[in-house]
Image (cartoon, rainbow, N blue to C red; front, side):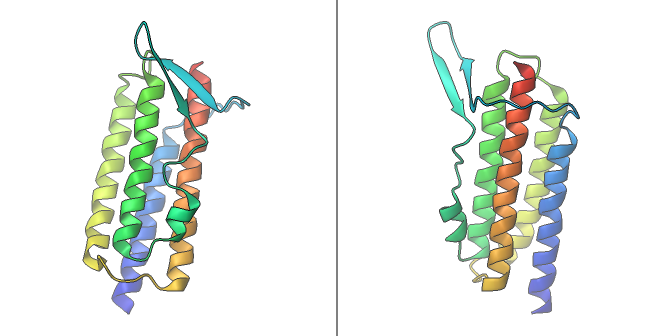
Amino acid sequence: MKRTKHFIGLGVVLLFISLLVACGSQSSKTASTSNDEKTVATSNTSKETITFDTPVVTDDAIESMRTYADYIDLYKKIFDDYFTKAEESFKGTAMENNESFTKLKESTQKLFDAQKKIYDLLGSTEIKEDDKSKLSQQLKDFRDNLQKQLKTLTSQLQ
C-alpha cells in the first residue's frame, strides 16, 4: 500500500516536472488569437491544417483508464501529439531546426522514460477510484496546458 502511494507520488512529481520543463521553454510573451487552426505549407502544391482544439486523447478516453499501464499510455499519446503538432507547426519557421526545442523534446522524453519505468512496475494494477480521479485530472490538465502552449507558440510565429 505504501509502495503504491510512493509510486503514485513519484509519478505525479515527474508529470509536473515534465510540464514545468515544457512550460519553461515558452517565451514570456503571450498572445491571444481567435483562430484555432494554423495552415502549414508542406509543399508547393499542398497544405496541411493543424487543429489545436481537437485533442488526440479525449476526456472520455482519460476517464475510461483502468490500470496504470492505461495511464502511462495516455500520457505518452498526449506527449507525442504535442510534439508532432509542434514540429508540423514549426515547419518553414525559425523554430523548425531549433536546438532548444530539440533539447526540450529529448529532456521530456527522458522524464517520460523515468516515469514509465515506475508505472511499468504497477502495470496492470487497477487504479483505485480516488487515485483515478486525481490522475485523470492531471492528464486533462497536462493535455490542455500543452495545447494552450502550442497555440501561443504558433501564434507568435505568425
